[in-house]
Image (cartoon, rainbow, N blue to C red; front, side, top):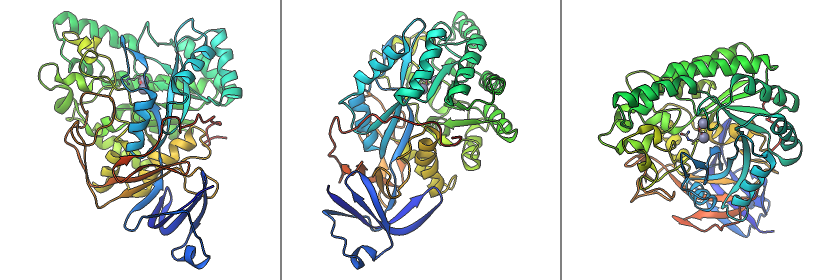
Length: 471
Ligand code: URP
Ligand code: ZN
Ligand code: ZN
């Protein structure tokens, strides 16, 4: 088993920072050593990474990605191979992707299909959540079996997309009751899709077909109403753990904060697009350009205070996690499906490569601390979704490590740093005051000196336990 010493850096965890060296033995962290201790005890590692002046942090954990997901009449453009390689470039060492079950489909079959897509393809470790798009006796039974046998302990449901992935309140309640029994987490796409579809039809009938109407037909009230309803259903189901995904609206955040203050097991995530991008500056760009930023929940207006509230939510732990909801589509032949009809634009933004960078910029801007960067992007997502060996640098944990250079810079853009399989960057021209230096996945260096040196198939499926927040 090869040993690696990461020496001279500042090790950042969710609870603090200290100078020290990290000793890796094979795939695991063996020890954290005080400065000088490695020499004093005669550590003679096979390889040494000089991290002087750099931060040594747990590899990123992105718990919301959609590699090659069929959606909106097409398929997300990153495969497990290209998407996990891009993730590695961005300092991410674990993703949790979504297997999809539609009405009438067998849940186990669909999970097996997702295993087939990912096996032998991934650069980094991966797990699965299961989307339940059709609640019936068989899918409810399968939920229990996935928790007990498959390491799939979280289930995403949709209050949006009627006729596609939508579940009604009764179906959601039944799935929540099932999760209350097994201890699983229910993840919720909280938007009132029935009301949204009325607004969409009215907008199209008026001739308001440009991409910006995607946001205008998905008002914040319909995110907060659905969030409130999901919380009440989860309470009725026995205070089942509920995790609201891709939160964008202040009003929805208020619902989550109120539920938390009332002692309910309610958690939430936001994504970089909601912290940095807006209706006016991106989605409302002239012509069809705004299609690049069509995602749901939508980008919100900058004239309200959604972004500052979301940063506040991250500071206050009302938002425990930052994920990307990486769901990339190219403009050519994919987003273009919606020319003349915003409702036909495939929903999704690619960003798996840039989350560590963009949220670090929040540290530079004074929005959050270095520790909170690590906590929201690595430690909490791992704990939230039962990735027991991930998200920390500690003896026995997987040696998934990002060495971050706070003195170098990163320019994001299609001709700059961009490794996702997309023909544009949602963050074109963004400058980051810091840079991914070295990335280690289970002891193997996969990115160093501006090169990807990992390999397809290195990444392994990780069976997850129940959420460490509650179990
Ligand atoms: O626009 C989005 N969010 N696309 C991915 C699917 C989902 O709802 O997460
Ligand atoms: Zn969603
Ligand atoms: Zn998603």
